[in-house]
Structure formats: C-alpha cells, structure tokens
Image 1 (cartoon, one colour):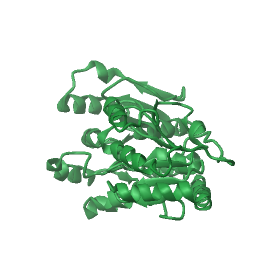
Image 2 (cartoon, rainbow, N blue to C red; image 1 turned 135 degrees about the vertical axis):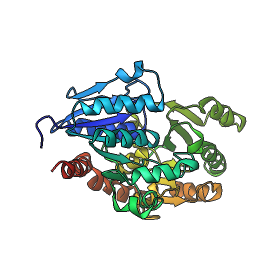
Image 3 (cartoon, helix red, strand yellow; image 1 turned 180 degrees about the vertical axis):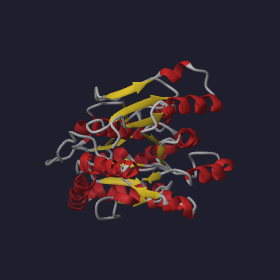
Length: 355
C-alpha cells in the first residue's frame, strides 16, 4: 500500500440518517489502518461522533454550487493525491464522484442505499447505468437493488449489509411494556399514516397499548394532527430523536416499520439485534426480506396493507410464546452484522483495489 494512501468519503452532509451513520462507522473503523477523509458537499452539519483520526473537509460549502463547479473541485482535490479510493453512497453524488474519479485517475466505489427506482429521475437511468459500468466496485444492500441494473453493472457489484453500531444493549428478559415502537424519519416514504391507522384498529381489542414514534422530519406536525383527529393524541407519542433510544425501547412489545420503499433499515437491524419482535412491510428493493425469514424471526406484510399489518400486530400481542420465539431468533443477527464483521468486508474490498 502506498505510504500516503487515503480513503475519501464524499457525502452531502453528516446529518442524522441511515447512510450517514454507516459512513461514520466505516470512516472511524478504517481510520485505524488508513488515512481517512470526509468531504462535505452540501451541508456542514455533523450529527455523529467522528474519530479524531478522520479529517473532515468543509471547504466546498463556501463555493457556488453547480454540476461543473462540483466536478472541477473534486478533480482538483483528487489530483493532489492519486493514491486514493473514493467512496460515495448517495445516488446523485455517486455520478459526480465517478466522473471526477475517472478524470483524476483514482479508484472509486459507489453504493446504492435505497430503492434505485426511486433515488433518481427515470430519465437519468441510462446515464446512471452507463457511469455505474465504469466504477471499480459497486456495493448493494439487497439482491433486488442489484437486479435493477444491467448485467454489466451486476458483474461489478457485491452485497454488503449495514453494520450494527457498537454498544448495542443486551436483549430484554422480563415482562414487556404495552408499547408499539418505531424509529423513523417522519417522511412520506415511511407511510406512518398507515401505522397510525393500523394502531387505531388494533386498539379496538388492545386499548391499553401506546404507539411511540421516535424520529423527526417534515411530516411531524401533519402526523400529530392526523393522530389527534383520530382521537389518538394520548396514545400516539412523538418522542423525537433520542440518542438512548435502543435502551428505551428494548422492553417494548413490538417494533414496526411501514415504509413504502426502503434500502436496509438500520432501525430494523438494531431492533432485531436487541430481541424485539419485529414487523416490516416487504418493501422494495427487499431490504427487510434480506434479514427477516417471515414467521421465524419477524413478520413481513405487504406494502400498504393495513389488514395484514393489524393481523400481525394482533398475533404478537396475543401470543407471548410466538413473540418470544421470533424475538430471540431475531437477535441472532448480531452474529452476522457486527461492526467488525461488516467493516472488515469493506476493508477487504478497498484492499483488493490497491494491491
């Protein structure tokens, strides 16, 4: 490995989000062996703890935004040290990263972190497919996301799941509180109105339960009004962002995700890892299906299907033995996606490019 070798992550920002958390986890881990830099391209906000060995460059935020401007800036920065592997996670930035990396003659890895049919306008699919065919490696989270692309792109792809963060609480042993919980960005993609509707119906036979929603986002006020109009203001709790959320939800009855589409939900992985009985929509491109064996370590329900969601919630609430079994089996995921296991897969990927 060249003495001045570096790994450069190109990100819009490090605001709270699933992809951002994975980037920070990887950057902190890789900084033990490599020089690691994170270049902020849109916003300078950082909401995660970074190792002191990770260098953050925010200089682009002072420059006029624009496609050509961004590419020129990236090329000039990359040419300063061609012993570089560029890593980008966000679809639009991926395209800039590929063009700049090729012009600067450095290695580039990109990753699709959501449903690729939703992350960019369909009129740009051909451009994305063309550019993705030029990368040194492309990382997917699911088989479904990989199959979306041409055979040429697929041949250069691999699947790596998200890593669990460190210090995940132990599984809970004891009587569970009558809480249904979720951790979610309050955004239309997450279809939280479906969750509220299902909880409303579920409450007919289970009136002593609460629905607790952790997270924030643009729909917060709309969702609060929606719950209030259904007479659920006292039972649907909006708990905001909480750094200690896993500790607070570990004794809940169940964890629910109702997304219309989803890459691979960190919240779902963490809920499973602490032994919560989990329900998720079987949303494209199949992230939940990658980790949930339906009826064995969780429950999958069709996207947008309130009746099936209520049925699944009723089953967990009414059958303690079933709930306990799927929760226990869900926690086995710790052995598959621990931080070191997943980060070592990325490290090997990078090492193979610089041999």
